[in-house]
Image 1: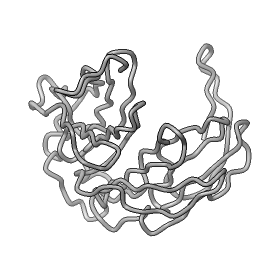
Image 2: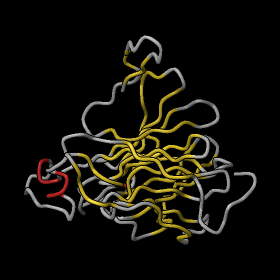
Image 3: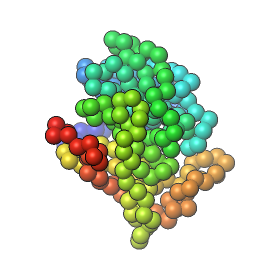
Image 4: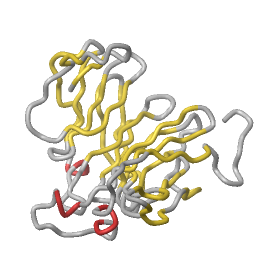
Length: 226
């Protein structure tokens, strides 16, 4: 795991975690860093300055034998940091890990059936915004796990570039916009059995990877403090 100077681009080692498959990360209010490990089903934690990482939470709910073959993925805290929310891609779930002080509590399934749950974040109302990488959309649930919006779509590949969302993998809010990376991954290239997904043949046509943006709004539920 690297720390990169945004001005010079110089990179230094922030923390070293051997093996596994490090994926997404987030920070708590103290600056501690939490990193998902997709292959071992672990959330690692480092201090704000990096260094040695410790296994903050390991749980079967963070592992998968599903498809795509990635377990723990996108991570973010709710507003009061009482819980860490983790997407499990292969299980199509979002997992809630209780946070008690600096320690991890129980892990439970927060909601199911988000097709290829990938990157996620929570807004100030604790709505959970999740990239559904196998249905090419952003799924938004409220704090109870009930879906309240599905945003975006896939409209094919034009001149080697995806039109709309194709295997959306991560997302971030900036002002009035939500920016989404299109991984456009042909899973046949990374799955040992070379099984395809519904998007594999489209992803194989992609020559230019893109970032999409969508207005940061929940249709019919706009709030003046958003």
